[in-house]
Image (cartoon, rainbow, N blue to C red; front, side, top):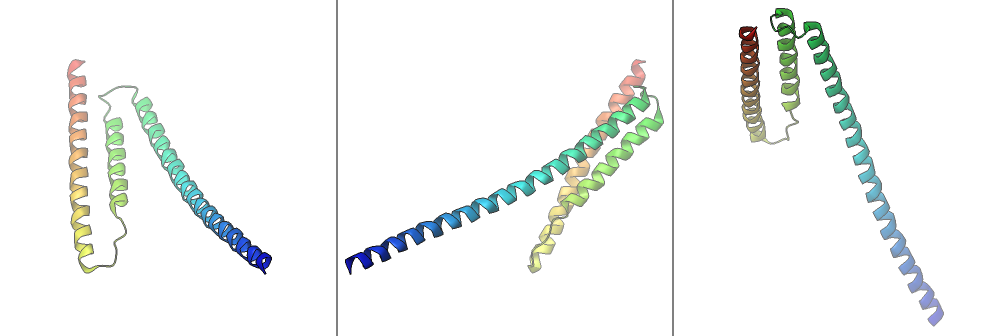
Length: 138
């Protein structure tokens, strides 16, 4: 009788250990899947940034480093506007189902867009100032 009880207790301990290890393995698998998905997103983002850098480099090469060329300046401004449009799309986050959440999200998105536009306006003003200084310098 004691041996039967010993085998039953041992079986329960082994089952408990196996169940805990299986749960832990599943958690690690989920974590690995999440990390892999994040890595893929980062690779896509990096590729997009590389493509943007290459296109800007091509524009600069087309300019021949001549700040007087209006076509190159227009192309740079168009690229910045495209970047602003892409950032605006990224700001549209999914909204949870709460009556006030929509209003708060819209206000937040509008504030973010205004902040983004202000930053881009400052950058554009700095670029224009640099171009004017370069034109005056030559």
